[in-house]
Length: 337
Ligand code: TYM
Image 1 (cartoon, rainbow, N blue to C red):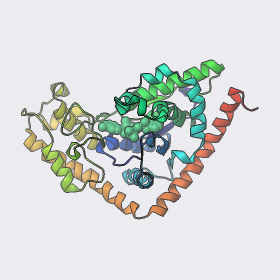
Image 2 (image 1 turned 30 degrees about the horizontal axis):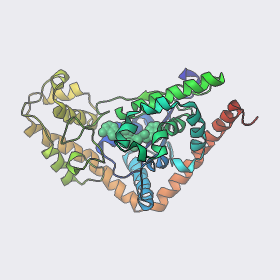
Image 3 (image 1 turned 90 degrees about the horizontal axis):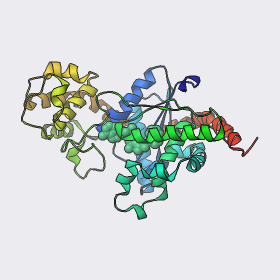
Image 4 (image 1 turned 180 degrees about the vertical axis):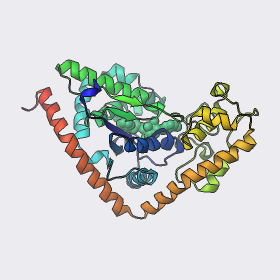
């Protein structure tokens, strides 16, 4: 069905502080690749999603600018892509309300991210945390986006977006919202903790050694990779040999994603090497690829007014696309027209 719609990419990241290598490889680096392809690209700092758990106002402001700096330092060109923060385009929340009436309680109850984030404290979690996926569907569908690049952990939310679009189209007898494709590709759609290969790399992990932060300096990056948990075996020559070796697989995946190679290509070079030899190679690669980004982020953060101008311009451009789609939605629902 997506054929009738302009190929358009939308994705978002929460400005809740601390971009990790997981965000970079699972999302931002791939956003840059899609910007270079034939798509219109729209990238959003989802501040309304961030406040579904408590954010200090001053931190939210700083983290939004830092995330914007991270996008630009990684290669997102604000002239080419639309870069903005979600709260500044009210059409997102307006469409989200309509989607709150389309999505079913049962659908949202099944969302694993809600279960993880709410934990045992469900009664005390915000209503916004529960309704989060309906807002995410609105983020995507207010632009009729056809493709959504995300890490593996967001797959269920994009599938829910498809369900919401299909139910809306069915209930109102229209073919209005596209059935969006999740784009979950490459070697690093799920970057794992450096301390425990069964856990996702996350900014909320208690141990800073479990993750590489986009603001880490060269020494910190090298030290974290040197100390990363591994097993005593040498590296295999084929991907099959990584099957039951979560930590080894994670480091090879990171190497492959950072060097734009497939896992098999990497293993054909490093198969047979011990980690004592592979880790310094990975550390060098990570420092070469990430240090220029963190340097550029720091430089941009010294120019907050520039960042604010970019975000303001981005939200104007975003509204131009979103407003007619909201208007048409209101007509379909019977509110105007
Ligand atoms: P968020 O802010 O948690 O993460 C942003 C992006 O980074 C990816 N990611 C990872 N990828 C690989 N390995 C990891 N360890 C890792 N950690 C994070 C996430 O998959 C995501 O792509 N709900 C979304 C934000 C959002 C959104 C949207 C995304 C709101 N509206 C519309 C796409 C379209 C989230 O919480 O991402």
